[in-house]
Length: 230
Image 1 (cartoon, helix red, strand yellow):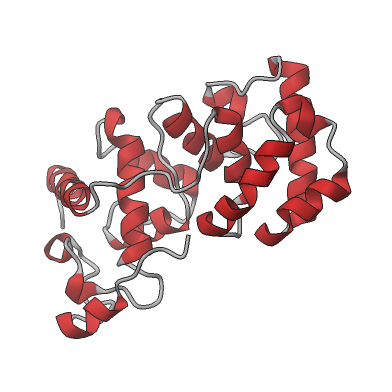
Image 2 (cartoon, one colour):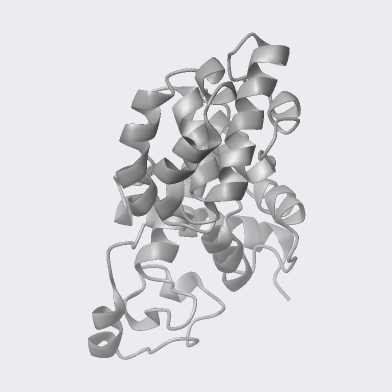
């Protein structure tokens, strides 16, 4: 049975190794301000960062502020964001988001979690992306990659994002949370895949209790490594 102290040490060793492996790990959504990141993050649901990044230049140009989203013609917005999927629901969320920002926050994206999660289409995951990357407020992004790797690393056995956020957060200094999220997500996209993790080419294999879920032969595993699909 791993002690709490041993768990913390192992978790931090994993993060240090991932940081060294992916020195450029960062948010892969393109943005220039908090509103752009918030919109891009909403569009990324059930889509890929790469696809979102292809769509957002036109979206950001047409809707430069919250008031523009609030006043958007639904059909036009839907056409612009159609490639990201679920475009009707996302259009509805963006129009309502713009209206809420104008009505309650003077058209500005708030920099507090408790305010962000009151906005249409914004949950804790989206809020933490915006806080960590647009406001430099530490946050943990519990996307599908982070959830999967947290379980494989033995950091949390919960399937609830808010529980994983709290349990994993307790293993690291708060100041590490945002970069930790990037490190883990990059590793999930490039190496520790959902179906066939590249265990034999994994830089944290010796620290991972799930080693062996994927091919352990280095020659086989290295072929599984890939750049993210987005």
